[in-house]
Length: 63
Image 1 (cartoon, rainbow, N blue to C red):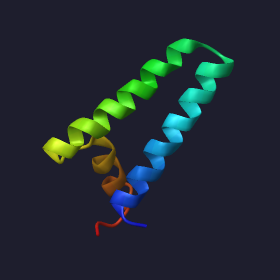
Image 2: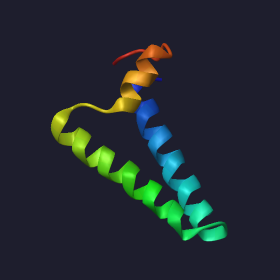
Image 3: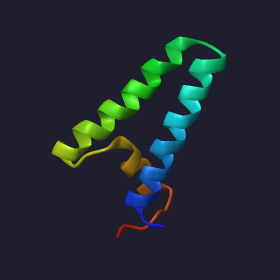
């Protein structure tokens, strides 16, 4: 998988897990959901996402 596809998978996983944690543990986990969403939003304009840097360092290939 490429960095972009892996990024989408990681973001989706984080959102699903944080919503489940908010439902069953504490509503404050929704702040993490918001953080992920805002990070995806800003990356659409700046073309920079910290997770992409991490994935590249882990050896995930670019497109």
